[in-house]
Amino acid sequence: MTHPNSSFDPKAFRRALGLFATGVTIVTTRAADGTPVGITANSFNSVSLQPPMVLWSLAKNARSLASFSECGYWNVHILSNEQEALSNRFARAGEDKFAGMALDQSANGVALIPDCTARFQCRNAFQYEGGDHIIFVGEVIEYDASQRPPLLYVTGNYALAARKAAPISTETQADPGAAVYSENLLGYLLGRAHYQFLDKLRRPLAERGLTEADFFVLSVLIVSQPLTIEQIAAHVAYTGIDIGAVALQPLLTRGLLEPDAQNPQALRLSPAGSDAILHVLAAAKAVEADLIDRIGEMEAASLRNLLKQAISATDPGLPKLWQAAKE
Ligand SMILES: Cc1cc2nc3c(=O)[nH]c(=O)nc-3n(C[C@H](O)[C@H](O)[C@H](O)COP(=O)(O)O)c2cc1C
Image (cartoon, rainbow, N blue to C red):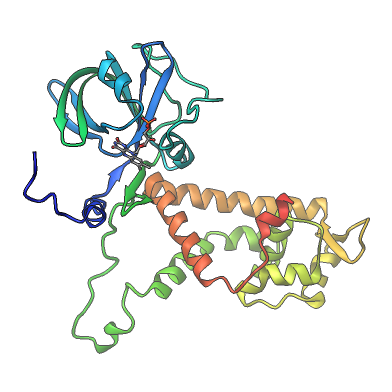
């Protein structure tokens, strides 16, 4: 059958369809010989609440087509933001997709992948022709859901979800300054978020007689040590604070830092220094937990992702602190 619009440019058509943001799922079943089968699919959707039904579609050229067409049950796994590697693994034909994976027990005998955002165990109820795909409709027999932020897929890329924020205040259009300096200015948003977050750390820092510069130095060393003064200065340079021997002297005098036994040019935290920074970092963790409580896990994951993008896009070429720590 020829369709009136089969002249669509396939790439452009795919791109247009890719503008519809979806989650990412892995659908699993059992082959006739009992081996587990699974594929990554973002064509998943809800169909009916009563009875509970869902659907997804499978390309007719998929190697798993026969298994899904003939099976009695399949399970849909909504992937979490930490399961991108699993999505890629199940999107590649050929390899043993389940190799080395721990699986949960399922009532229907079909592979059930752990640590997902949500899972739906389904009876293979109906199949429909859908052009070059087969549409599978399943009746949901059991399901479970967690708080894990879901992985999304849009414009051919993995993405994270976040609710849209309400405006901080109502902008006054009449003010000419509002065009240049508005509540949407990224510098304002980053700066304000930073200061409001740091504000809660000022007390624990003051209690230990630590300045913001001390805090940066000690927190660099808790990740990677020993470091020379130059190395510490390079890691902290993004703050605009100039760390040198003079700045570090009070920390040495107070016994919070000490020269490394093997390399006296390099410094490390003393037990008292470790104790002090761990105390402040525990306070930072508590502020973070409170923030996540208020904005939600999904938004926190999204915020981390966007901040990492902003940091990488504006990185003046700082040494990689965490990478250095792993080496
Ligand atoms: C994010 C994402 C979504 C996908 N969605 C679908 C889908 O809905 N249906 C489909 O047939 N293939 C989809 N694929 C491609 C299949 O996962 C891929 O072709 C897989 O290798 C098929 O496995 P099989 O050939 O072993 O059956 C998707 C791939 C990715 C990365």
